[in-house]
Length: 248
Image (tube, helix red, strand yellow):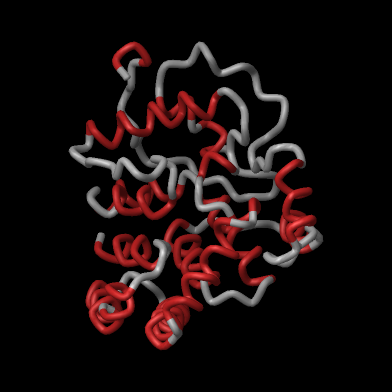
């Protein structure tokens, strides 16, 4: 699915090559035709914004949003496992799934980095790719709301992902997200306090210890369980193959 590859590229740290590819990226999205007109227009608006913005400003904005703001982290397991010990094993299991799928993850990024996850999903057949991306769909929906609250054009990317996977948040979940504190990226004291708070998690609290589980599907169970108020759609078939912890 080339659309997922384009979304992956747009969520990566902006550079001159990305700016130069603006026309090509829009052409790919239009040719594949997966995004509804409203989502396509919003994503194309972001592409134009990135292409026309001073590169330093584009990079600075990216860092302020995704590197300095914990609630906007582009690492999926930050929103699922926080700093718990399950996070490390989940990383190992996800790398094994990538490798089993013939995908070589970049060594300079953690495997749960959203651009990498989407790049891997883009190599799957369409139905499998959508089901895979849908597993953390509630995380994408929450990121959409948080970015929209800031008026960020990057909200378009997560709106597109949520639209593809049909992930929805109910009124209670939306109200909770909208009431969250939203520190400015240059308010270092507020940002430090945010990072010192309890782990940011979307899954239910009080889960049983997962150390004895031996499959990636189990490790990602918190991703596959929606946050309160998120509509759940049962997958048509399993996506993640069995991964032995001893073979990781």
